[in-house]
Amino acid sequence: MIARSCKGLPLAIVVIAGILSTVSQTQASWDDIAKKVNLAVSAKDEQFARILSLSYTHLPHHLRPCFLYMGAFPEDYEIHVSKLVQLWMAEGFMKPSVSKCSKEQAEEYLEDLVKRSLVLVTRRKSLMAKSKVATSMIWYETCV
Image (cartoon, rainbow, N blue to C red):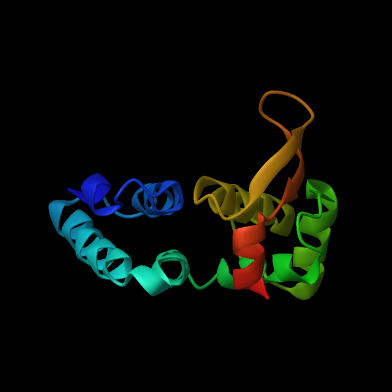
C-alpha cells in the first residue's frame, strides 16, 4: 500500500524507506506513515516539497541540527567524516551520555542520517568505514 502510494517516484520511495527503517514495526506506525504519504503525494505541484517535509518531520529532534548543519557547506561538497564529527562536537550537538563518548555519539548520528538517505556516503576507506559524506542537491535545498 505504501509503495503504491509513492506512485513510482524514486525520491518518494527512498525517503519513505528511510522513514520506515526508523519507526516501530507495528501496524499502527505503518498505517500512520501510509496516511501521510497519501497526503504528501496527492498535491502534484508540491509533491517533492511535501515528501521532503515528511522526512524532516519524522527526523528525531537530536538529529535535526546535524542535518541542517550540512547546509553550511557548498552543494555536493564532500566532507571528511572525522572533520564533520569534530564540527558537530564543537557545536555541542551531542546529547550527554554516560555510555558513549561524544565522538561515538556523533558517528551514530551520522549513521542514522545515512540510513535515512539524508546524507550520502561518497567515499569509503574500506567496506564498512565511511571516509567522506555529502548532502545531495535535493536535500541541500532543504538544509538552507
